Image (cartoon, one colour):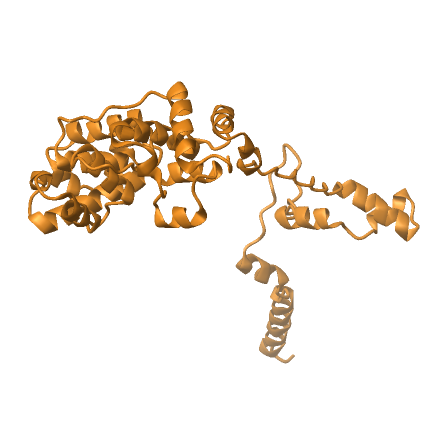
Length: 331
């Protein structure tokens, strides 16, 4: 495509995109504030998903002030249809806070009557308003000619060699508005946005690759390629404990009977730590016999004490005999 002029390149892009996508018309019944918030939902998303997410916001919350004070997690759940609902919720909350701090309401209809230059400058200063959302408001509400470009669209144009890295950093595609007339700006912007949404969703899609090759046959070398992951090496399984014990026995030169004296393996040591040794049980008493009671302490002392009773009786006998001899009268 190097020999073709830039304007002709964009004209070719428009013709091919009309064969694969259907353009979305601008909803003229929405206010300026609603266009700005819808652009926050539409960025890097398909038009149908953005419509569902915006309708969910309108029907779930009472007004835009309630949306402003709602947490990002709750907003993300309401806009779950979007590919990145948290990023869209962040843009919406920041825009609502910025508009409320600037006007203390959410009425931006006065900007329709302002000159295009000051109106664009005011929207660009809003926190949360991106180049895409500002261009969408300028094209759909303010009557200007500005084709919105988001991240996915810029990446697709880079693959087609219609934008450079410098253009991507600036967020602007030079010569785009000059190549596409204002009367076809809304249609071309909608078709180009669907291409960018497909690229953001899956840059490896075969259908998307066919469209890009139709636009530029030389794009084959610039298409993103999947990374081939190398299979992980299988982990070596540990040998069983029995094999380790037999190996240690063979190395020590013993036979089967010497395994009892061999050192236990690591697995056996671990098993021995987990399982405590069983306690020895007392021998069971024979059936039919009562267990013998151990004698009390007093009974043991009396049984062990020496028997003094026979000695005392013998002494009394001798004493009575001596007393009898003393009582006898002499002849």
